Image 1: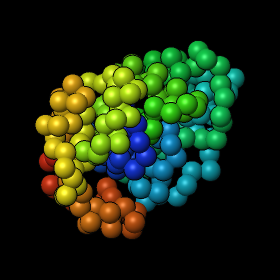
Image 2: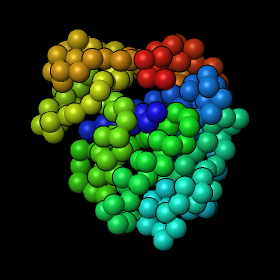
Image 3: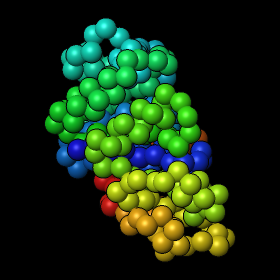
Image 4: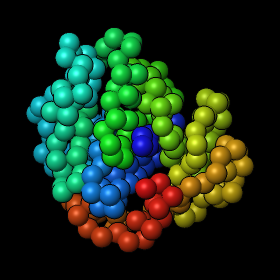
Length: 218
């Protein structure tokens, strides 16, 4: 199954939620693929920046086979594979649909970090295409500006992940009511998780509260 996570505003937590959800799915079922459309996952996962081509290069290449896509996968830990972003910026308009088809045929859960998809640009368009092919989850903070952007963009999603912060005036119920979407998970901002990201240990340390909160995602 494809799980596309995205936001309408930078700094919403899409990278973190995507990485942990993919790791949980890999441990549960034995295999999961994390597709990085933004380029931040290697740093978050604590691995070296891949020097090999990535998914965007596959989209732009003449060899658009499933085998060529499989060869781009980088193992992060047992069962968890990363499909890095790559460097290409343009590709034929039919390729995103082919990518979605191949990802769906991988026979495992695929988590897509689509980043910010409400802004113009080729990555944004790619994220929207992939979101339409599977389960689409908006990641947002209970922030007036984020909800304003989401409402203006006419958000279409299957649910919302709320990254909760102390001191916000808006609640999960407010987010759900404004967007007309069910809240499938709530992630509390935790300094310990931020320290794990900075140390490159996000998925190597046990964050049990975070993992419990993401059961609605993974």
